[in-house]
Amino acid sequence: MVWLSRAADDPRACQNQWYLEPDVSQLVGTGRLFDVVAMPMGLGLAVLDRMQRDERCVVGSVVVSLRRSKVGYLVGPGSAPVWADCVSDAGGGLSGSRAFGKGGYLLAPGPSATSEARAWWQRGPAGDPDDLTTLTSLADALAAVGRCSDLNTADLMSVVGISGGR
Image (cartoon, rainbow, N blue to C red; front, top):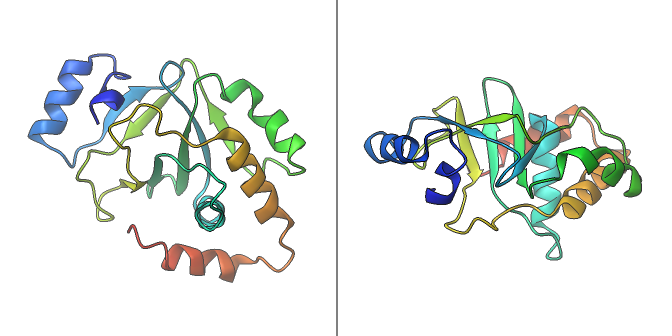
């Protein structure tokens, strides 16, 4: 979490806060160390499930926000401006997803946050600042999930129910 705290306005204070209260969320800026692609929770978890079943996909840190009912993928810095084109190139639609880069913020859960919290790490950040989801893997998975004609609300809810990280 040290590398993630470097994205905060005051990295030392963020790091100290996480040390003292590891379940508390902190605001960290997007755009310098990483961007975030957020999408509705059911869709985001279905995309994660798809990516985890494909050994070619690079899946980095993934945060779940219960309060906003969103899933956020940490992707490389500079990804936000090209997200829509990347999804289009993969043959998909944005499906309610949105990318946040320079000037944005992520309410990052603490390292010990659990599903009882308002936000938690579905796939927590490793100690490596390169632990980011590959944008093309994410776009391909989003397009593939969007093409599944038999994917309905019940299927999405079953993915939420079996997500394991909660």
